[in-house]
Amino acid sequence: MAFNTDAILLLPALLCDSRLYKSVINHFAEGVEVSVADTQADDNLADMAARAIENMPDRFAIVGNSLGGYLALEIATRVPHRISHLALIGTNAHADSTEARKKRMQAIKLADRGKFTAFVDGYVESALSENNRMRHAPLVREMARDLGADVLVRQQRAIMERTSREASLCDIAVPSLVMFGREDTLADHAHQQEMAKRLPNCRYVEVPKCGHLVPLEAPAMLTTALAALISA
Image (cartoon, rainbow, N blue to C red):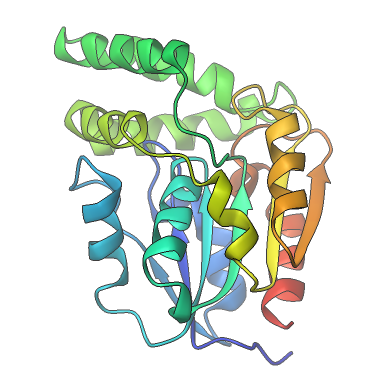
C-alpha cells in the first residue's frame, strides 16, 4: 500500500509515551517515517508544537489521542501547509470548561502533595474500558510512573490553558479521521460527532468495547483506519 505522506507524527495522550502507539509504529515503520512527539518537557501547547515539528519533513500526517489531539489541532493551526492528514482520537476542539479546569487543578494539587499514585489509579479506571482494563492497566500505570508527577503537572497546565479550535476545523481540508471508543468516559461523544461534521473531508469511526486509549485498546481497528486515511 502506498502512503500519500512523507511521515507520520504520533502525539501521545496524557501520561503516555511511544508505548501507547507500539502497534501503530510496528505497522507503519517499514512503509513510512514514523515519529513520536515529546509531550513531556513543556507546559504549553505552543512549545510542545514547536518541539514536535522541529525535525519533521515538509509534509506529514498527525495522529493525536486525547492530549495528543489538542496538540494535533495546535500544529494544524500553526503549519496548515505542512499537514497531509489529520487523525483525532478521543479528543475535542473545545477550550476547557470551568469544571474541567477545576478537575485539572485538583490533579495538580494531588501531584504537589505527593499523591501522584492516587491520581494515576483514578486515571487508569477512567481511561480504559472495563472490558480492557485488566489487560492494559499495567502498561498505563508503567508509562505514568515512568513519566512522573512533574510531567503530569506540565501536561495538565498545557491542557487547561488551550484555546478553542472549533472555528478553525472548517479550514482543515486535508483527509481527516475522528475516532473514539464507545465506552470512553473522558471524551464526550457529541463533541466527536461535532468535530467530524465541521471537518470538510472527514471519516467518523466509533470503536465498540473500547475506552479512551484507542491505540492500546483497539490497535487493529486504528491501524486499519490510519492506513486508509494516509492512502487518500
